[in-house]
View (cartoon, rainbow, N blue to C red):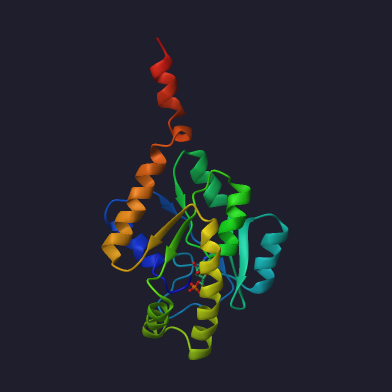
Length: 190
Ligand code: 5GP
């Protein structure tokens, strides 16, 4: 959910040497102060976003609190073709679409320690008015119910612990049989 600290966990994950490509989302919401087009988001008009959906240029998208958010397809596939991991920082509707389209995707849910704490973070962030905070809080409860469908849950209470949990997921995924086919084949070669 918005305000759970997905962005903060990822920033720290990368600061600690985490290796993956974080692709940039497109959105129709207005930029917040300090947000740059092409860096934090690709900011689009509704018509342009809808054109991209129609032309199959958007891998997944969701309507969240009155705005579109979505993943431009090109950069994700380019990176995947070169063999790298791609991270998407998105809400639940989009995550479940990604699973449909990319069954090998690993879904990690970032859980706040409590709804009360989430409210505090959204209010402290001071980027939205009270009405938007309330809408995001009720969306959060819905989203948390959907976390049962994810592969992993990271609790973002203490940041360092959350980052450690994310790193553990990366480590575990690398050891999965499906991701070690090459190694297994090599061992079988005489
Ligand atoms: P915010 O307006 O706070 O930047 O984002 C609102 C919510 O939309 C957050 O939960 C964020 O992770 C999610 N979001 C950001 N980009 C995408 C995207 O490309 N696709 C989907 N489905 N959700 C996104």
